[in-house]
Image (cartoon, rainbow, N blue to C red; front, side, top):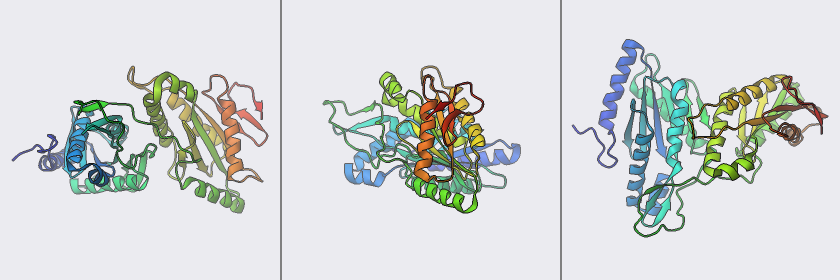
Length: 375
């Protein structure tokens, strides 16, 4: 029987099912792990309604080609059905492949599609899961689908992974685009897929996550009632505007995405993060004393400082963090104002620093050598 999808020319559903059964048997016999990602093109029905089914077919071929090109030789990229695709990461635990899986997903929006004189761009959501003991391929796909559903509920254009009990973000939904939008017509005769930097969304609200402010207010109310410690932090890329001028929006977006991945990996399930201005992330740390918040922030800072990227793909960059703990008389706005002051001091000079606001002063965290600054 045919093993190739007629439209996209990648592995079809039948061949995928056979491969998954084989991977499950290998796992049962030799404990060889493997993981699976389900990818869904965002707002595909709306795209078809707007641009027509021929354009939709071109998008499906484009997505298949993009992921096939970016995948490793050991990976299997297949069309699952409709606008859904599956990538099998042979021999890979979810811890080993989830960041790479998200980069594979994100690569879809990094190129544009030329069709009928219009330049179009699409994004995708994804869910990732690793095979578990006593689980078959249907159970694995079901868990990856659950993670995909959470990605869609989170705003699309992001990825989550399922750990067997819950679905956790690989990266937050930072750059969602409701649907592919046309841009000025291309010159005649250039109906082809071309590389083009994605546009960087700029938020005109304080937090990108609509649930962040209400949850923050709730934490403040809990502190007033129970006295449990509560800290917030702002982690921001140093020299953001200079990086934009030097490297452009495309590389800057990758830096922001890399930072989001690192920040998210350092947080607990109860913590929350949201985009905060340009190149920054607001972080809520319930039950955390300010000294412990400094330890969390230092893990983030060091991880970014030591971030490994292939030569030429990203310039070296750093982040600074400002931290504040809830104090008597603080509401959520005042609390974040203090964290913002600490961040501003941390970013003076070369940045790559962590400062805390103790209610009066912004002072170095983690025994940093920089002199405290009165603000």
